[in-house]
Image 1 (cartoon, rainbow, N blue to C red):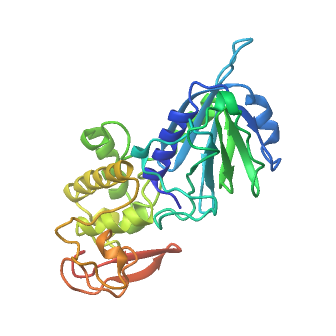
Image 2 (image 1 turned 180 degrees about the horizontal axis):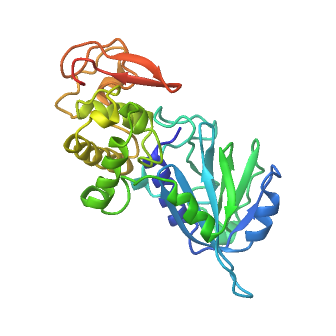
Length: 323
């Protein structure tokens, strides 16, 4: 499932390619047809993300004044966006989003459910002269959002709804603080909210940091890596983790996820800890400390990395380093 950094890169992609442009909104699959018809021809006014949730705001391009509406998307385990367009329609390289070629194969393991591509209908082609033609949808496309230069196809999301302003505010109220919100690292209110949320529960902290009402955007990789780097056992009850340690964990999540946005993938290993040359058969050792490294030596203490299920998700940790 895409974590918060990937969804933030999605929002930036929409900001760059769609915001301020009039959009054709359709539902090739048909399941979103009635909602698509409402905003078809409207202008995308903003694209934002909070945790794993993407909000695409649409405002009427002309005619009577109407309240804006939002397409609210949660990709879940199987959702994906695919971007295609002419030579003017390319995502900025700084986003660093996982991409696919025409074969549909993704270029990384971080977010197996996420496909971001900007396939070109002819690099350098003048769209005004050649007239880019949108290809037919591939598979079950829930929503197609198109401009004159390109399109985005959404397939397989857990959630895709057209919502009003009050409904959007209600959705946001159910989410915890987002480590990728502007100024989150230094925000004492967000940090305190996270700390108090964890300490209010006897549940294991490894469960709590995956609870989107406690902290928005952290997924399985960031859980494993953040807890490892702060030396916190994922099995420790929230009530037994000190405020100081949780405050440092909040900052850690902010730093790790911001780095993920900047470089376009999740990588948490300090270069001084990465084995050189890389360990044979262990490509993750250059990127992650414990995630997907079951039975292999901990990069810091040499102990054996462990794995077990926690709430149906694979949990990775080092018993020697985490207490």
